[in-house]
Image (tube, rainbow, N blue to C red; front, side, top):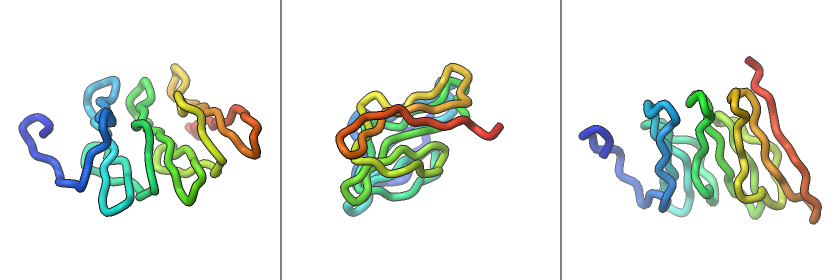
Length: 123
């Protein structure tokens, strides 16, 4: 329920995944259907993955959303619906947005080594 309106029913909602945007105008969470998980922002469902975790992250200006996802034994970061490269793992606490909300960063593991990755928005 959000503001007295019942949302769509799913097989499951991720524990502790419910997040309000910093401006409190949007809500995001991890939902499950069959054996797949996906992020829902307001009522918009995202692409399905093997797993998502821990929860979606909003940028400080509330205009962007990022999260970690798993597919085929690999992990990747999804920013504003766009998939980044696949890695062996993505570190806890990733991804994060810059204070200006125009950049995102995360730590990824490939072949046993860790490195910092990220992107800038095109705006």
